[in-house]
Picture 1 (cartoon, one colour):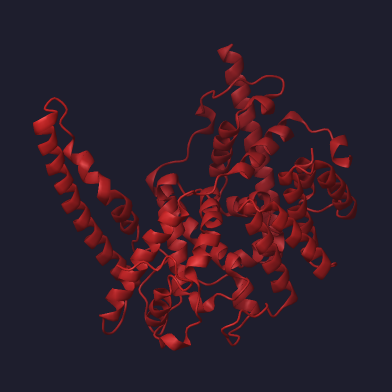
Picture 2 (cartoon, chains in turn brown, yellow):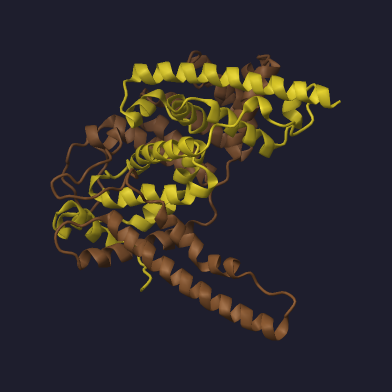
Length: 244
Length: 205
């Protein structure tokens, strides 16, 4: 195998080891919890907005929500503390609960989150005349200037945008552990855009997916073809390392 | 509060929200299944933020911040470019967090890093994965912020230079130049870290 013939120095191997360690980065396992927290805050903001006249501030609404949750947390915490103390008094006089610990239980997760929103955060005061303070990714901003929107998702209007979208999907599939799907999407890229500008990246995704599936022989063959076709590509070192 | 978790339109309160925020009538706002967007991309956004240096204690909030922006900008997100949009926002959120973190605490002293494992002839085979990951964080922390971003996007996220340039709204040449500098710096720092670890290990023995 071409990649196997390359001799790496100890420093290079150490460097690749560090970079490769990120390939097993775990994804958060509390997405549902995160969603419900997010959704609850959104609904609260919508309620506040519906009752507001004039300018509407998301940040202000989030602060109000934070205050609301903080108050709820303190009250609940106090109640829990009281119950805990009562319980300890009757059942376990030698092991009294710590009031502060009880106070922190319900309040911390939500109020901490909301307290993070401060003036320099990306979500700022929203005014009808200048509602945009964070520019969207250029893929959408520059290449899709205010296209008409319809109920059905429309395919991206430019070839490059379509390539990016397809690669995005493949990478998302890898991130989700759907390696077969990632491989299918990468191969679809090859079929749809044989000379596409992002063809090397699509190949890297395919090789990653093959390696992740344990198909090392197929990955090696594909890596060899990649290195022959794109010898000076910035991803060449990564490909060599993937099939080392 | 009524949960909309099971509804395909879950989270669509957001459209009303975005319309209010933009001062536009709600009927003009493109419907966006925010829940699907959140479920599909929350993990990768969260992981990108971590790789960009957002500390664990702030990760969840920073990830939610990204989706707050997406919620408010729902009508600007083109079908098929959700991932790019979210990554673009994540870069900005991470930059904000990095500023706060730099103000709060100095960078870790790499030279003072304790010996965390045995290093032999093949140190990479003996370093536990988690230890390597911790060292990666330290090396990334030692990169300048602008170099860290391009390095993470290319080496860890697998993005092409063109995509990195587009996300950061910089010329492709600038992105390429930063990537070269980032790789050089990364190599130099990781070499230093390895040398330090090896020295400490020899002293320990």
